[in-house]
Length: 265
Image 1 (cartoon, rainbow, N blue to C red):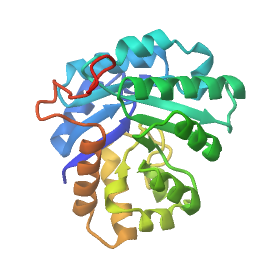
Image 2 (tube, rainbow, N blue to C red; image 1 turned 45 degrees about the horizontal axis):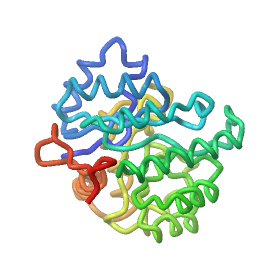
Image 3 (cartoon, rainbow, N blue to C red; image 1 turned 60 degrees about the vertical axis):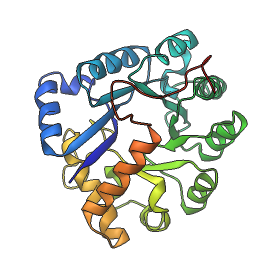
């Protein structure tokens, strides 16, 4: 099974003891690409450092809503030009934990969405209990390429997202008994979804309570296959192609083809 891990945090301290061994296992197990996602200054730098060590690991730059008060636009502008940075994220709104004031979250999300358009990079959206506001900010900033990571909306919101041409990504949370995403998974067009682990968080059943890793990504594919009535290999292939297209993985993976600011057609 050929898999594309679209959202991992392998620079997290949980992986300090075995990071390189785990990465070797991931690529040996069928994981072909990994997007290591940043969420503040420190992880933007460490994620890029990790990506530079591995041909098929790419990274992002961005400030999560929890870290919105530390936002540094100049860091985004500097790192967005790096060849191994393929997206702005994860960015968005989190009205569940409220670790940053609402006005700051909104302003920082809008600023980063604007920069994503300016630098011609897709957006990885963190949306927790803020569906409509996330949607409205992306629309206002004219974002064309976005993925709602760890999607948690209902079928009506899913259709809104799809109508804009944006993507939806599923994690191991879809394997939980309380998941309410079965209908979303059944109706989503084949070319509009991706899969992820969000490791070390959200380990799929039956691994809840343990550290998650890309080695468990196949369980997400298997659950989607069960709900859609197709094989896990088909889910893996579909999501792989979608991720390859969304992140614009180039033929030579060390030479991405983004049109950076100042060099647009």
